Length: 99
Image (cartoon, rainbow, N blue to C red; front, side, top):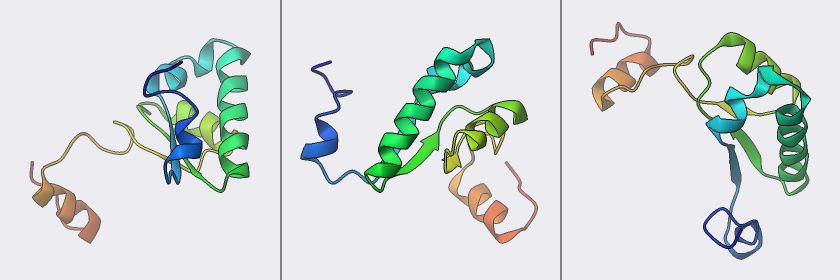
């Protein structure tokens, strides 16, 4: 594409993280195509010394598949619902989270 999703940004900007869109994560269980795309994107990103983050992870099976595909980090409701800054700090510090 020619918009913001264009791969030219990998060359033109100091990018160090590539996020795998939730639309790919949602399709992980529906066949090999999504897995192949995620695997290829992850390999390319790692070749470019980038960290890969899967977004929109809602189920443990999605996270397990992403880890098999060498995705480095993840975000989504599996980890936590959106939190206020105070609730996030409590979570990180191991205190009870009051939302």
